[in-house]
Every structure is written in structure tokens, then in C-alpha cells.
Picture 1 (cartoon, rainbow, N blue to C red):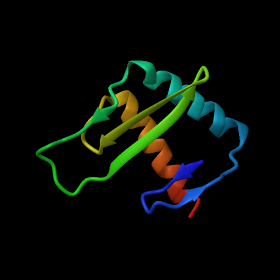
Picture 2 (picture 1 turned 180 degrees about the vertical axis):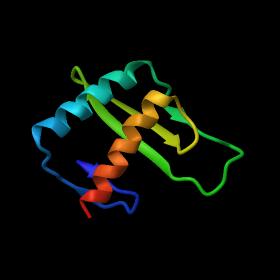
Picture 3 (picture 1 turned 90 degrees about the horizontal axis):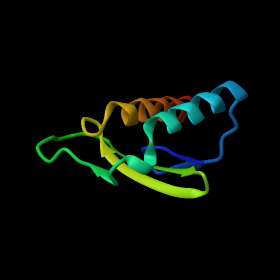
Picture 4 (picture 1 turned 135 degrees about the vertical axis):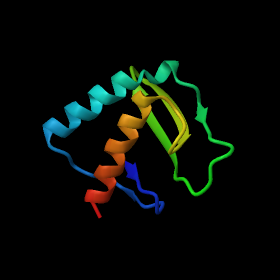
Amino acid sequence: MLTSHRDQTKALNFDAAVVVDLQRKIADADFPELRSEYLCASCADQYHHVVTVNVDGRYYTVSADDSAGPEKLSVLIDTLRVLTQDSQ
């Protein structure tokens, strides 16, 4: 399930290559090691992203502003942003 920035939740079907790419980016982000929140206190007018993934049967949720968080998380968020935009 993907929820867009407009709070629209959709069940989407992806081809195998997209699923493999998402799984790799989730693994690369190393969710068990991420903090639960990455915020930019002095930044304005940014999107705030909340990503929940299931890794080995455990759910991890991380929230991050556009300019906050490690690069490995930003790569995944950018991919999810494109997928939600393409589905509209």
C-alpha cells in the first residue's frame, strides 16, 4: 500500500523489476538501524514522509522531512514519491 502526500491510500501492482528494486532499497536503507524520526527544525515548506516497512516479520516506521535523514533513506523516499506520482 502506498499513501500519497494527499493522504490517498492505494493498493498498486508493480512489475517484478520494480518490486526487486524496492526490496533492494529497503534493505540498503537498513531500517532496523534508522532512528524513528529525522526532522529539520529550521526548515520550512517541506514535505514530511512516513515510511513503514516489514523487514523479516517486524514493522519499522520512520518519519523524515525532505532535507533530513540519511541518503540511504532519501533514495527510497524518492523512489516511493515517483511511484505515487506515476499512479495518479
